[in-house]
Image (cartoon, rainbow, N blue to C red):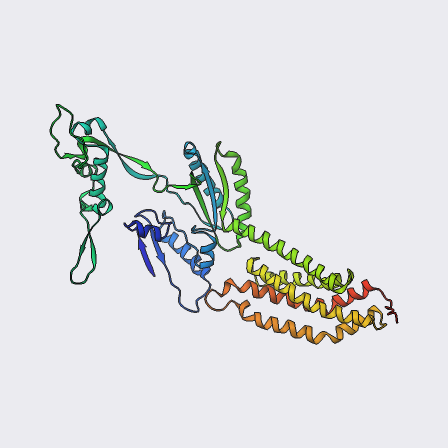
Amino acid sequence: MIQDIGVPISGINLVLGDPSMISSADGEMLVALKPMHKPTAGYVRALRRDLAKSFPGTTFFFLPADISSQVLSFGQSAPIDVRITGPSNNDQANIAIARDLAKRLAAVPGAVDVHLAQVTDTPELLVDVDRTLSQQVGLTQRDVTNNMLVSLSSTSQTAPNFWLDPKSGVQYTVAVQTPQWRVDSIEALGSIPLTAGAAALPPPSGATMMQPQLLANVATISPQLGPTNLTHYNIARSFDVLVGVDGTDLGAVATPVQRIVDATQRALPRGSTISVQGQAENMTASFRGLGIGIAFAVVLVYLLMVVNFQSWLEPFVILMALPGTLAGIVWMLFLSRTTLSVPALMGTLMSVGVATANSILIVTFAAQKMRRHLDARVAALEAGRTRIRPVIMTAVAMVLGMLPMSLGLGDGGESNAPLGRAVIGGLLLATLSTLFFVPVMFSVLQGRKKVEVPS
């Protein structure tokens, strides 16, 4: 386990690090699981319970554990991000709405780690410089700022200096800074010495000569509350309520969250907007796209078969295997307690393709038998009896190939398990539907008549 407490001083490390850590009061723990471990969700659930019990009053939340969720979350620490944006005049109203929204979202079943991404009330010190007084002693606002920055954050922030070791050739940063343990009170902060820069203007006539001053001589220091981090979306100030999901699927939480967001829309001040971002938005777009893709694939396959068979009826009979395929997918996902996901929809596409191919074998053979002066019923029985071996062989080969994936074994195996389960469930019922239901529909729709072939 790797622990990282606080924000690194370097700006480069801050950019490349975790964006959820915003101050020295934040910490991050990275837990590496051993090989052949149990599902990650169980460990996360146990840590969430134990940490909250051991450290009451502390906010804990868990980042996405797998790389797929991290990519889909776009750097956010939760799959659902309710974002409120608006002008700076609405900041106080937006903060109040965001806090109330976080309390309401925390009551949604399955929602966990609900928190506001922005820390709005952090104790801070306001240094109010008297510009007239500072000008009289030859100091500008920039001089005061630079002296405070050097004293509190070292010279590496304003004028980086390096020392090159002649033996090893390694460069080391040389920084001058007031020891942090000495700046432990407002009085100690006010004793920071101030000197004028090289570009400072001379003091006005009649004023004393330019001499080093203390910060308390030219500025007033007062405690107050202020934001620790500021975020913007399209220039406007934003507030994000992050919602995690545990014990259920993302859609079961995203639906009530969207209802609460729609109800909150009416309470927003003029100029502010609210929207749901993160994986919930991507999930809706992906499901919509895959649903349209499946429907378009079925229509396209039907039209292609119409051209090949020169008939509108026979391709329709072939597609009679698809209801059984979809029913098998739904039952397998239900029995295995697997939620509907993008991998499951990809498995649906694969099952539809294999089921259609097997159904083509049955219908094509039956149509050939009808052309030999057999009626539809006899042709359908002959097709089912003759084509049972290739249909079963195709289905068994596909099921056995997807069986290891459906078990979700190995590291990250649970991510692709829905694809294998959808394929297995779809082919099991699709095979029965192809061998029994499709011949029945062929005989019913074709009618009990013979097809006369002209000489």
